Length: 156
Image (cartoon, rainbow, N blue to C red; front, side):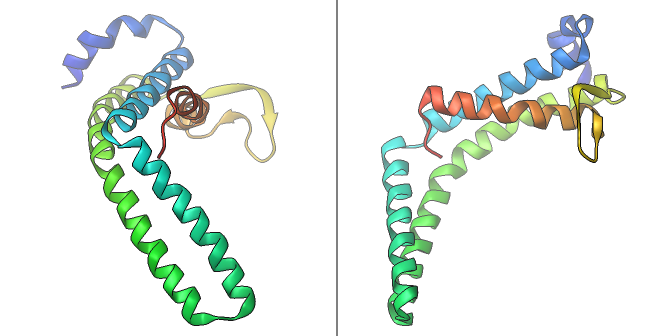
């Protein structure tokens, strides 16, 4: 399978490895968010999240008054809403899992010895990301996930 991926992505190996992992983190983030955008009913997800927030506020107020029965009822309703939200996100999670499971082994195969040097030094770890390509993938994917969610207006 790595050979097939080498045929598809081999042209990228001439680029700087840090740039290649950055490109893949952007592409994978986009794919994941597109799965969530088109496989989740966005309006329903937004409604559920808002209801969970409302229940959380109500529950804090009831906890202050000490009304345990109301707190338990609100907690039960919140759990039901959380379960419904999880059901909504299960399909896109599985759909986005497939491309990730294809790309990550190829990155590991080609860049397992990559050590990323950051332009500035961080406390404790210094300027070298200690997890190599995988650490750089996670660090670089966070801004891409947040940006694509915001641009695509994805409710997760």
